[in-house]
Image (tube, rainbow, N blue to C red; front, side):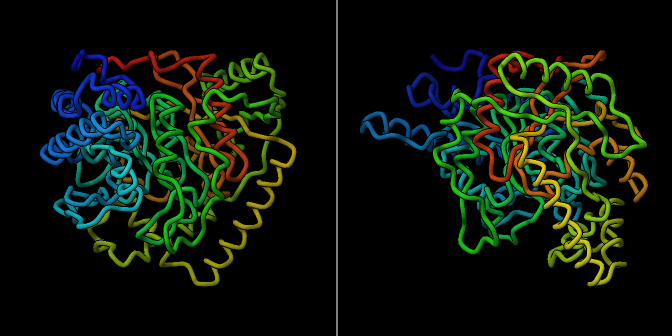
Length: 472
C-alpha cells in the first residue's frame, strides 16, 4: 500500500503493525518524516540535528529484517522500522549530541546512552535529535547557541522545555513518537503546551546508565496515545548494572494495562497554587473541573484535597550541585545565564548546606508520599498558565529572579521529581486563544500501571489525538 499521507499522525503502534504486515516499508516511512522535517522544521526548530543518512541506512536494514521475519514466521522487535526522535540530552553513537551547549556543537559520541540502546533494540530508527535548553536546565527551549524551539500551535510561543523540541516535533507530525526526559517537569510541561501525552516514570524505572543515576531526572515517553507511552516505557525500562536505585518490576507489561479496568479510585484534586502569591489561569482551573466531573461520571471518588508542599527552591541546591560537579562541564563562561546562575548557587553553598538540603527534602518527601495513604492519585493542572511568547522575559536569559518567575508557571510539576513518583500530563482541551491545556495525574510510588489504566480510560472518554496544530 505504501505511504498515504496519514502516517504523520498515526500512532507508533499502528505504524509498527503496518510494517510487520508489509503494508509499507521503513524506508518510505522514514523518508516521509524526513520530507516533513525538511518542510516544517525551519519554522519550528524542533530538531537540532537531522540524522538523514543514518536513519535511511537504519530503515533499509529494518526492511531487510522485517522481510526475513515474515518469511521465517518469527516475531521481530516490537517497533522494528518505526521512526523516533531522541532528545539532545541523550548520547547517540554516531549522531551529533550537543546537550544544548555551544561547546559541543560538533560532538559525536562513540556510544549510546542505555535508554537509546534499548530504543534501538526495540527496533526504532532514530530520525534526529530534538531541541533542548542547555543541559535541560530551564522550562523553555531556549539556548545561547541554537535557535529557540517554537510551538506548532503558535510558532510565536514557546513549546516549553526542556523536552520542547520532542513535544513540538510530535505535535507537528515530524515523528510518530518522542523520547524526552524530565527533571522538574521537562516531559509534562512541553506535552501540556503542545497538546500531547507525556509520562514521567518513577525514580529508577528507567536507567541513567552509563552516567550517574539522577535522583530527580528520568527519561520517558512523549506520545499521541497512552498505549504508545506504555509500550515505549516497556521498551526502555529496567535495571542496568550498577544503577544506584531502581523501581520494582511491574506485574505485567505496561501496555497490558491499556484498556484494563482501573477499578474505583479515590482521587484527590486541587487547583491551589503551591505559591500563595501566585494564581492559576482560568482555562487550567476549568480543565481540572471538567476532569473532576468526568472522573465522577466514570465511577471514581473525587475529593478536593491539597497535598503537602515541598521547598522546591531549597531543594534546587541538589540539581545545581550535580550540574556544577559534572566532570565534563564546559567552561563556566561559555554557559548561558541560567546555568551560570545554578553553578554559582552551588559554589556558594557548603557541604553542610548540601547535606541539609538533602535531609530536608527526604523529610518533605515522607510527608508528601504519606498523603497517598488516603488517596490513589492526585489530579491538578499541569501548569498555571499557557506558554510565553518567544520574546517574553520567561524566554530570555533568566537570572535567579527570572528562574523563580518561571517556577511560578510550572509549580505543579517539580514536586513529583523530588518524591520520585510517576506523573502524566493528559490533554484536556484548549483555552480561549486555541492553545492546548492539560491536567496532571500523579500516582503512588512505582504506580505507573494504575496511571496508565486511568489515563487510557480518560483517553477513551475524551479523545485528543484528532486535534492537530495549524502548522501541520
